Image 1 (tube, rainbow, N blue to C red):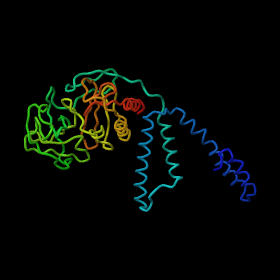
Image 2 (cartoon, rainbow, N blue to C red):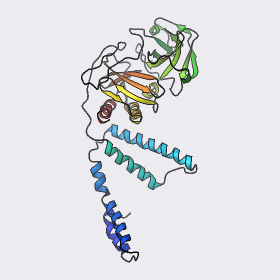
Image 3 (cartoon, rainbow, N blue to C red):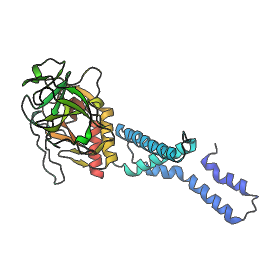
Image 4 (tube, rainbow, N blue to C red):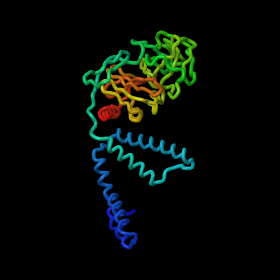
Length: 335
């Protein structure tokens, strides 16, 4: 491979006998000069980039997104194109790196730790700045036995908003309630039970959402949304991951963290959830105190919600993910 520093003398030597005129020679030398300056230009543009896990993840997500879109478009035009050429791959990678360098600047803001109220109470926002989002719980009921359904040890809590669930989002029925109980925590972990859904009622999977994340069921004649949660120290089943209990990637419309703000760009919102899925580490079966809420609004009009305590997010168990909160605050500050 020819060194960049050798491009100009090499061009002089190769063009020394060219008879096409000085104009062509000047054009070629101008292009060579531009390539010669490329390392310095790239270094200047990427000088402020911090090599953090969040940046690594953004690069991977954006590269995969562009690759997927590019392949789909190429197949639509010419189905026989099965892969990019090496030159095209290098061009895409350079474009992603330069694009991130232009859009990703400055250091991460300082972490803000918070303490809060009980898991089944309505959380309160931290107040202060006028652009901060207030915490509004979407879950129905309070106390030790909120509206629940249980499916073989997996617990789902009823949400108040939105109501009702559109029938167009119902995919297929997955179970039938066979036990009604006022105290779900005391029942065996085998079977389908509820303290709000009638015996004989169907539980439904929602289109595009894993049944490990949420289900729908009819309550008093209205289809209601139930989100997977921890309950009575029960959270995960064997070999489950955080992504199993929050499987909504590529379906997110916006993400809101009470007391901090809202990320409304769909691509960035989905990148945040992907970051949470990749780096979240299991900490405990539940969050005991929380004063912030993470609200995930989906493109289909439904919303899910997680409790927040410092660097922990709690839905089905408590999960530590400081990278997510750092990146979220960065996105709010720069959008």
